[in-house]
Length: 129
Image (cartoon, rainbow, N blue to C red; front, side, top):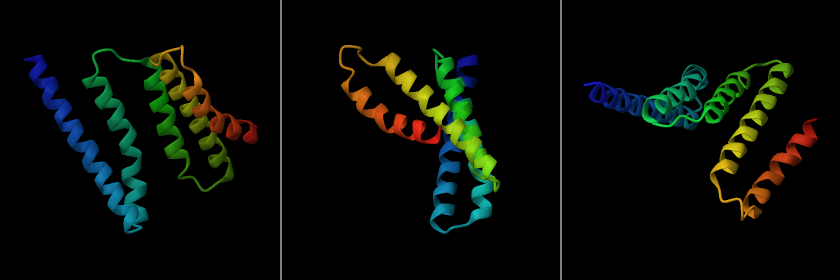
């Protein structure tokens, strides 16, 4: 019974995620800023909840990465320069954590693709700081 309830929850979360993504896509196309401000903050929390309910093995680093992605999305809506700076910092932490997750998954004998993917991140990181 629990598995059936969990499956329904995952289906509802998937529907709500893709519905929110579609609403954001349409609102970006028609440049409807008010809808973007209200809908965009819901996207990452739905994704976190979906990951929590659908994944059998939870990766704590990935959850923290999604949390920093949410923080950066919210801070990018701010109008003060400090919000932009904090949003960029949260985004850089998000990118670093995602690279760490990928590094743990890939084969360590072939680090060339990881090195190539990390170079732009490091350029932006060292330019900001």
